[in-house]
Image 1 (cartoon, rainbow, N blue to C red):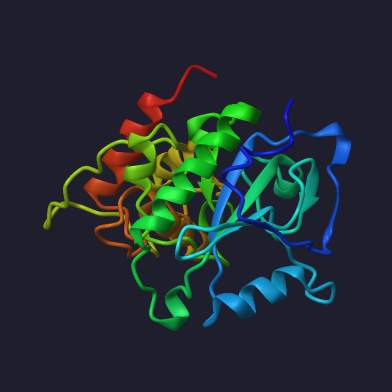
Image 2 (image 1 turned 180 degrees about the vertical axis):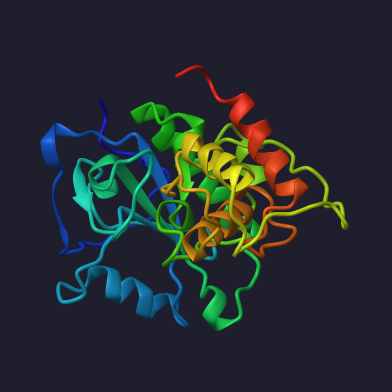
Length: 253
């Protein structure tokens, strides 16, 4: 197993302080994508390397496409925070974290430049090939921490990555106004069915038949990643049908 990316991909190595051993002999099988979410990319890079911050990541992809490596891949970077996927709560031990320079929703949330998207795609392809990361385990930070995080958000071009072989994707079902929807405050078997489907995909959601704030947050996270045309936490036909199509496309487990 190679712990190092293609040398042509990394422009600079900077040493982050916050990392440790992967626990229980884990090796990465999740690739987790973030945005930096700070007004300044330089400020974000300083924070990711600051020993007082308690956060880090393996890579940062700058707006111009240059890639910085902050933590060796064999080490456990501290990027996921309180999170879960398929019942696993130590996402850091299972993942490689890539931060994409973008100020995020709190600072204007610009589009991701083409050069940056190309670099992210190339880096992700290299990581997935070397570690055997399966497409359905290329995830957003918001997927694993839906109540806390929005990144990399609905503007991130997941379809472009998927066309290059990175990540799990199906064309979203078109929006259809007027269809019956599930939303916060609803209860009953249809809500339980939705929660079950989200859980089967990997999301951390309680299956109790109550469409509460936590369920709405998971639905928003799903929409940001897989049905970005409208991110509102309402499980309309488009959202539910896209989820079912993704589940059908999963390899047998």
